[in-house]
Image (tube, rainbow, N blue to C red):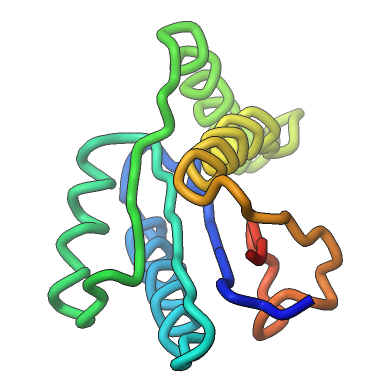
Length: 153
């Protein structure tokens, strides 16, 4: 199969950018942009997709487009969560915050955040790139990065 386009995506489930979450988001943004730019040639295109959970986070990520000369490399959107999904995600995040306190009985988990983010990412990508074929073999992922979505056309 001749590759005509690489499609890469990441989903971030954070509801705020407190602590290390802002720098981690920026690093993931840069990974997407760098990889897209690196994969593009005269014969092969590439596009990155980033899904976040809030308008504030989307706006922050979009502010980096000019800073990092990322025009036409990345699409940034918000996961369309229902009110019930947002409440469930907020509860999961609160549980995770509680779990990191010493003596807490639980472990941090991100099942809902991962599911909501990756589902929204997959829908965005397939809406925009209707012929994309998702690649699940992580050995074929560019730069060995564990993308939340990787596909080819």
